[in-house]
Length: 326
Image 1 (tube, rainbow, N blue to C red):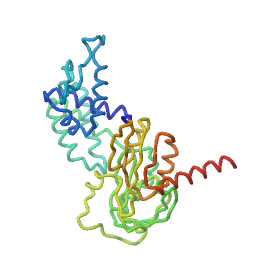
Image 2: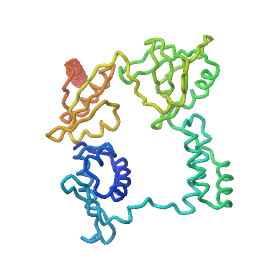
Image 3: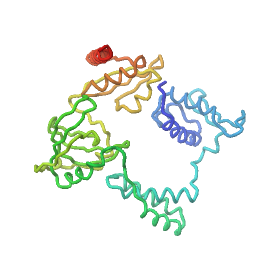
Image 4: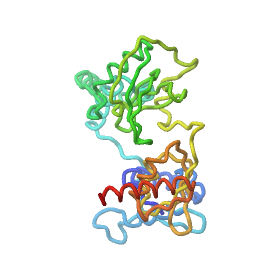
């Protein structure tokens, strides 16, 4: 089974335990569908739960978790059967942070966040809620350290004025720098980086560009109109990878030690194989970044197709070895 990062797995387990305990007699299929996991992943989660419990961690202190026939059973975990409650101070801190975050420009989930904050505020006393609101006014939230900050003001200016941009952009997929003209529609933050969704005149398609990979940028005198019905909020909430007609389907077999690739790479499918490996199917218009990834994984990956990718890997490996030889 592919290795899963600790944080997502912990979040899943904290949700899985109370849900199973609240649905006595739930089947393996129902749990797998509810949490979007395979039977093998569920079995591994239950094995892990068997080693969890309360001090002093004796046989009677550990969680009982197993599959019986087609049913999932979790017992001796009453302390996880209900969501943990916030203390008053934790609720106030969360309210302060949430109110400050809701004022951040480009947070398109602000409406949902506001509704959640209203529910949290209702659980506090009027005095605590007022104190939290006053504190929130003195808190500033900024996304910093990405290398994109110097360009954000100009990007937002060009978006507001609907002015076309000339940019020098580093493409990670092709490992090259190119000159482009783009019509920027919206700038947003995701996964710790800033991105701009724009119409790319080179490909005549809508693309997403990472702002810290823009090396130079010039606002031109040419103007543009966003496409009819363009929804900035849905773009910011959508996937960073936008399929195009130039994409090629790629199939990779990943060893358990390479399970992290599945977490960071947009893909269409990831199916477990009998030998414990995972077959991942993805689409990409460029092979160069995949060739570097395959070389990095070494024996933990098998290129199933297409043959052009395997050839690119061989060429990249040969070129790399040639540099060492020189």
